[in-house]
Amino acid sequence: MSTSQDQGYWYLASYPKSGNTWCRVFITELMRLASAEPNDELNLNRDIETGAIASSRLWLDDQLGINSCDLSFAELDVLRGSAGDSAWLYAEGERFHKVHDAFRSLDSRGRPVVSTQECLGVVYILRHPEDVVVSLSHFFSWSLQQCVDFLLDPKAALVPTEFRGGQQVRQHMGRWDQHLTSWVDQQQLPVLTIRYEDMLANGLATFSQLAEFLGLPSDPQLIEQAIENTSIDRLKKLEDEVDGFAEKPTGCDRFFRSGRSGEGAEQLSLQQRKQLAKGLADAMARYNYEGPSVD
Image (tube, rainbow, N blue to C red):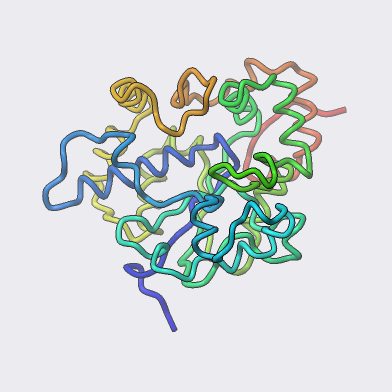
């Protein structure tokens, strides 16, 4: 049975710190502006309700009818793709779900770790890995070298304490290039791939493409207004107005920090940049990301 855009749902997939939240805020603002009676100014901690993150422990427990704390992450990864048959995924206004997991994990036995039933497609957001390193470093209070090593680790994951709860389950990512190809090369769901750099430099064209793919209002004036209302400078101001974005981790000064491209080339050592360029060469070339020459 085919699924209409009013009934189906979408994934917004990305490696962490690649522009996923920016996309979610833009979608929220575009829908707000297109509504018959738009509310007052966007409130980051009240209005960003595009959907939950796919690694939500509470949602998985509800969908699977289990206490996920009783299972290892390896056991849970096999089950996760079967979650999502309820109306939660199709709720009006909450149909765009954030995902940081790779499409499959090392333990999922070849199965997706997300539900694909009735899914209309995936927006995959990517960013230059050098800039991801810098942003991760600020977000998690890790050293730059720790972040370089993380992007190059085939077992990389965000891992809460196993068997002890927490709001999310393990999110397996693997190397940056493995994460990318796991989503853009899978054959089960349609994919739109957008680069963070194009969101910055060619906002109208890039966000118009996003809106069209997701079946959202595509009027250029609405899209331009939504872009203006969700610029990085504007988001920093909105974050200050709510005394910190709710998704900011403890120890992080602010969620919306710089938003610039090119910080990796400025802040990483030549050796660190060469590590990334060597380890991620094929994927970087595929998406026109430059790095230093590697011996």
